[in-house]
Image (cartoon, rainbow, N blue to C red; front, top):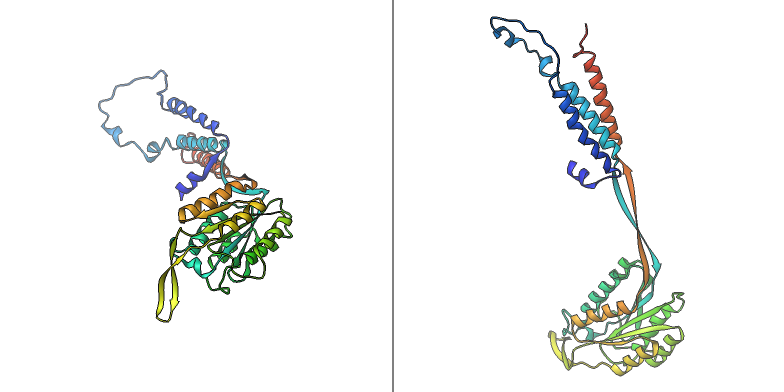
Length: 334
């Protein structure tokens, strides 16, 4: 307990500790033998004086010790011991970002560890942690689209919704146009100077109510910048498939419409990326993080609590105790 207190203590005026240098001087003058003329007389022996020491004689220095303790407490109090607690205030101009995540069955492919979907969720979570002042939302799409989380600064809730995403929540398919349009709808009323969509998919558009090119034009009209990410290795990838005899691994060809994704990104002011493994996916999100910098600052406030009063109280108690003993038990007059 004492160690914790000492490790958190701070002295506002530590130069007062220099006064401790005067204590050895006081001790020296107290212990130095007095210089005075003394008379002498002869005695036959000193044996009788050996039993003359009383408890008062043995404790005669206690008054000086109390005085030194009092002075020490006063010096510590003058140094103003304090404990401090820090508070951080984060302020600035953030960016509105919507994740559009493909959750079709092919996102269960295990060319990423442990799967494309789980890798995408983990990297997106780390991206969220790096951007404390941004408002973010989450849209999922397969054969249709759905808003899992509207724009929010509650990143804990957003990450909870992100990790709850599973394949099979929506009708299977890859409706890129519907996913992009839903993301734009979430940003349509935003007043942020920078509105961004990160659209991640591993396939080709094959359905939905809205053509991807139409969704792209809507994004352009609202000033939404779209970063597209194609996920999947080159060639074939193992995909778990449910059959009557259970789940089996089946190799399926990786088909990503890179031309469409590049066109969407370029025409909206974003950029297209291709991720072939966990490391490249992580690098892509870090690059997007650098491209879309939000302006914010962290101001730290430290509140100090004065702790000198116990030392002042102790100094007074030592002085009072010394005064009481000096005029009672150790008095030098009848």
